[in-house]
Length: 284
Picture 1 (cartoon, rainbow, N blue to C red):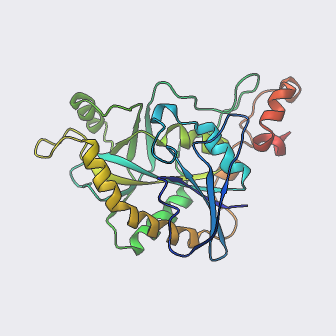
Picture 2 (tube, helix red, strand yellow):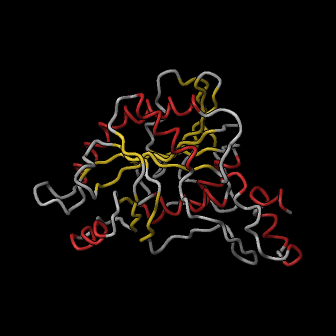
């Protein structure tokens, strides 16, 4: 049973000091997750690593089995989820190779299933604070220990992809006051909230998107190069954060469904109750 889950690149679990490394193939009512989940220990701390795009980066952002990913982590006992992802900067002061821990989201995705609740059950979760404040604070403090340049707070615009933004779109997002743009925080954050998991993002800035007139427009070569340079920093931050996560959760994430399910209990189809038992069993 792993208390902390990390979703990111497949190389994140290659950490110094990680012991008892194993792979868990998890099946869920929502299909298979992106890949086998790698579990291991940092001292006495159990961690679970999930390669978001599968090993070899073979799954497009629009095709990610996010429900299966979140459900699989929940089934392994995960309570805290650290998302490590690449983003483009929408602000001059947020430079490539900087890190951002956002506190807000704007949803520009179009084709993604973003709820577990369907087929005869309705739940309305609060989502005013889409990232867990407690876990975000832990990540920020962990990043500061590594001497990385980290920006606490900011709005993440989640786009559908897999194409990058047009210049007009990039200018629009900047006019909204957004800080970074990426493709993976949604529906991960929504589904993590429905699963009552604490979720926060460690965003690795790889480029200036395409708005910056004096900088080269975003390219995949630029992203890969800068992302690889930030992998070492991300591993150090995850290590510090894991060691700081102790005791019971003090945020609202752990009880997000307590008053959210509005369907009359006797009207929820039995097959839906069975499929969502892991998520809603304690409320039925």
